[in-house]
Image (cartoon, rainbow, N blue to C red; front, top):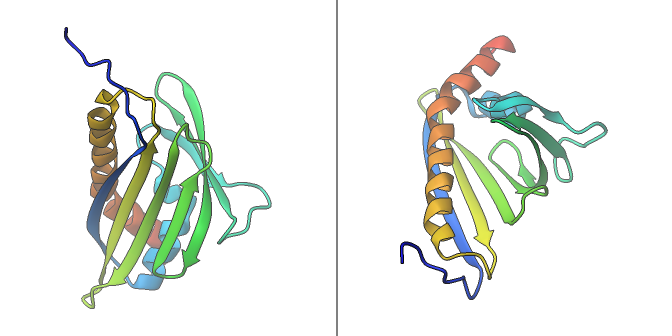
Length: 161
């Protein structure tokens, strides 16, 4: 037999973390990070705050992706500690998932920006999903960390910072 038909007996939490250095002071970097444009990349074709949504806890951002099909993701802010930390949950995901970003001033004109992602695979899905979802999660956060410095610096520059 080529594959496993075994199913998860209990939920499995997967995590991935990546950190990058971004030029700028902590306030400017934070403001650029909470700007939905910081999420624009590759397949993301549109993003923004939901109409009437607060900027902080309870706020919702949307991301429209096109990679053969069009999908909309909605993230809700559940923790907001400017200019150092925010946590969001993906209210549109098929499984429980959340993301956290932290910003720390390194004291040399740069900030350290760390993204951490978590997803919980529910019981009853194939065990093989652990590996494939962990790879996708790790790849996604590493890709974000690789492009984020340029994106944040461009947003800061456009704002006159």
